[in-house]
Length: 122
View 1: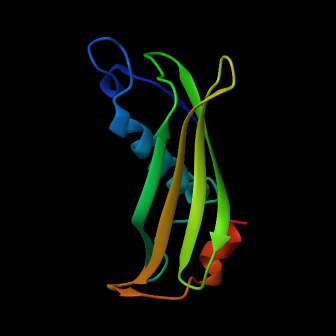
View 2 (view 1 turned 30 degrees about the vertical axis):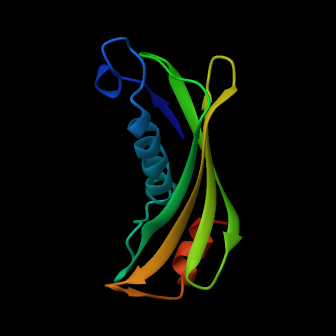
View 3 (view 1 turned 90 degrees about the vertical axis):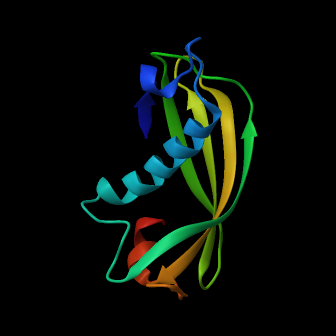
């Protein structure tokens, strides 16, 4: 998924706020569903972030286009470990990397991941 960096994403110097990279990754995870005409919420199932590890490598700036790539590293009965990397489009340089552990919930209880989600995340 590609995103342009807007003024609202940056500080006064035009550098992306560190927390925005996590927002961009969240948006990319949702977009995996939306681009297929689906929702990241299915019946009463959804994912919550349990843990994340972020590596801020370089900054992006105002007007740049970045690309977020997502891959499943590990799948368990009720959780997924994803790696999400953000690249600067103009030089294809890795600028941010994150591992995020998602837990599947049904209402307010941990639940087995339904096939609906697994099909989208192949």
